[in-house]
Image 1 (cartoon, rainbow, N blue to C red):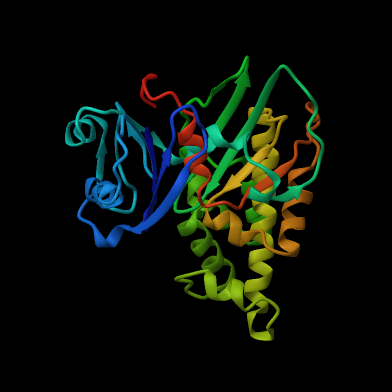
Image 2: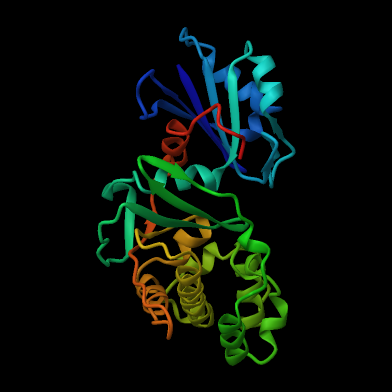
Length: 310
């Protein structure tokens, strides 16, 4: 029996995957604040279970190296060797949560997705997709499927310099604005969105949530305009990423900032900017929002546990 887990900054989801299956079952969610560490979450999940666990795949919100990682927003270290020893020598693999979504992306069904750009996917012997995570931080997961195997190479796209096209648009909105966002993640993240709203409106924004909820109210007009611009900037980012990664089988957006930024008409603002043509390369992939909080478990369910750690 395989156990799969997705550890976020607030909650951890755990499920079983029966032998011979790639579908998680019996998923439960736990608030991290109630536990001292991930090992205690697993113990709680297994307390009333009698199934023999032989494998554990853990997706976590933070960088992973050597089958070990530290959560971005919580002082938990997720170490594959320690977990193996704690739970009877089982095989353990630790991966980044965006890598798990990369393995899930091409398996997701329409009810798990919200369309942003509804373009067709053309058949190919090799399918290429891209997961774009905009949440607490930023990163992408390139996904390549060929001969029945999926590969999701590790990248760190969030720490690259901001694209020149986006810098120019920022300075068009407000002269000198771009200098506040030296990297992609500096703009496209929770902190980046708050900073963008603050600088554009002149108000200190500690959370974008109330301004998103107050959409359409007279007093909210400056924030409505700023959030509209932000949706367009996400689209401009996708226009650059589609050229860099050639995701002909689709772009899959993940993360709370992406989902909350692209509601209603803002989804259309994003799609218009994302589909702007490049003078050298013409590519118009479909774009979806991943709307299933358990999607990472689907990716974990199909990953080879004994492969080289991500």
